Length: 221
Image 1 (cartoon, rainbow, N blue to C red):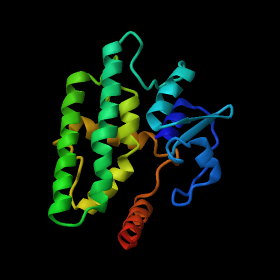
Image 2 (spheres, rainbow, N blue to C red):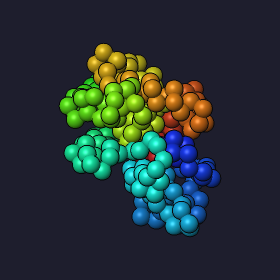
Image 3 (cartoon, rainbow, N blue to C red):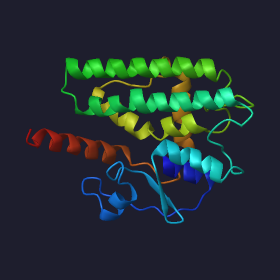
Image 4 (cartoon, helix red, strand yellow):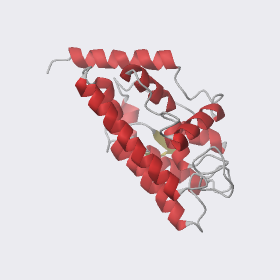
């Protein structure tokens, strides 16, 4: 998510891969509050943690570089709405991804998939209300108009994970007929960032997540 925003803004950076199963001392020092949670953006030796914080920081640190993450300053209602739905996704939708992946097959997983779809439906309806024309000066494929914004970066950066969850669940989680705005944003963002090298290939990501699931099952209670 943060890497996609950096690439979109054209901000040069150095990427350091981390083994999240065995976090380095450097990462733990950079983000001790959250126990080495990623991402962490280090600017002039000072770390910034959490994706949403980093995305807004990039907008403020490089205000002249398009695309902007949030609507213009003279649209406070739209800016607040973007922040609200970003937080909604973080608090209500994202945690269900982990639960769907690690749930037992059958009724437990089906119930979680249904709940995740319901929460995405709430978000779709809210976006259609708060950004009826895409939230930009002209209508476009993104939730914020012709260029991606905060919500597009958040949702689009989860596209690969969404495809993996759909494969695990055995059904599409983001159907174009049910979530047209969200689906259109995911497709457009996927195409836009295809050359960035920030996404893990589907098969590799699926194998990685299934391996994590097996390790969790094998771990002593």
